[in-house]
Length: 335
Image (cartoon, rainbow, N blue to C red; front, side, top):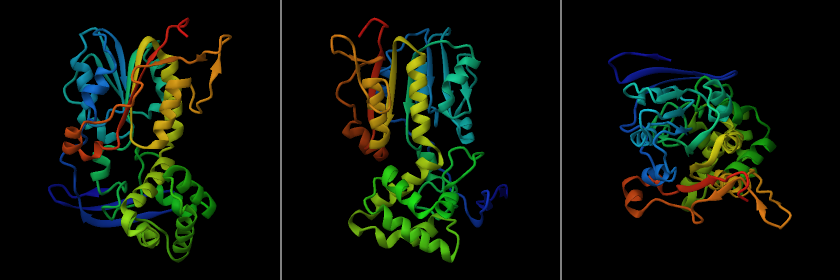
């Protein structure tokens, strides 16, 4: 990427293993990196111990991390994860209690071992995409901008969205849109993409929209288009696999009485979180003891999912789909 300093214009070049897209356009940056969702509810749900050890696996704009730090004493520790280099600019003033880990949260267990942490008092996750990613027109997360079809959270990563739509088979694309976008017309979308790429590579968000727009009904076109982009983003970033690995590590690392506070934004990730909290695994498979009681590592703190208030949704419309679930690690003999 070559950027002319003190100018609103930039010459952008996004490279992938086989595709390169060059674009000359105006750079727009978000006024706010990310507005933390359900801030008081999610942090309060951790039932913070002032001298405890905590992890925020989705640092983003740093809102949740700063709130956690405000409730800790000088002996406590907070580890915050984010794989996106852009998030590092939100760290702020140095704090001896705080450690930023630039990594995917799927490696939670490895990093805790590296730092000598054997147990956690709480872990918070605000899943989904930050406002920064949606509003950054150079990353390709939103169809609001004509941008390189990238969608990588970690810009150092490998395969991007352009690679997927140009190289995956029509059948693989159909399965992807059905499983991760929950689109009923997934096969028609995949067929349209396969036909379009025969003419020229699909390199930008506009290329993808041009190939598929006729397939989205006018009354729900934007919503279904967002689901198509969601499916690509999930696969590019291996989101479901990473979530399962992080939750498995959290289950192992949390001390008895430690809290897991997770905000989800779509049914796929919410189902995984709900299953982990109820059964201790992503599939929701239950095991029972001799007396027929379900064996699970967690106790649900909120039986009913927590959603943003009407006031929060008005201030931050992107919070509308948020769901908060909180669970507490059981004592070994507490079945």
